[in-house]
Length: 126
Image 1: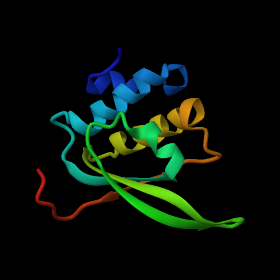
Image 2: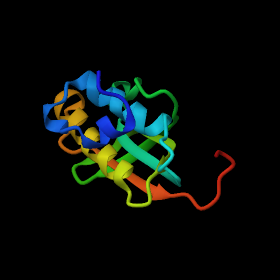
Image 3: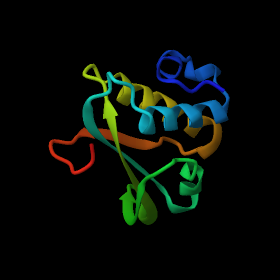
Image 4: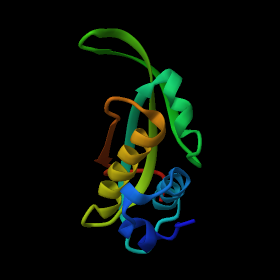
């Protein structure tokens, strides 16, 4: 298995096994390196029936939501939020997007996964 910050940041996600992708997502989110200093919030929105694919995450907040997407009115969705630390050059956030896209292609199988990161100005978590 890959974990460890540098291995995950430099791994070629297209060649990674699904379990390695999951391990790296957890590594980057929950085991920050000393260079991860900026507070960020990862937000992912998925169909409720597909949210189980993210149960591997070590910690998150999950919200039941309803979304309308063009021809799909009132879809039952789940919004998942995870606070994490990013590097000044946003390498962690960029790598998380890449890894989530890989996980989507291999396991979740949505046409397109929706995920974003947002800076957090103040937080009680350190």
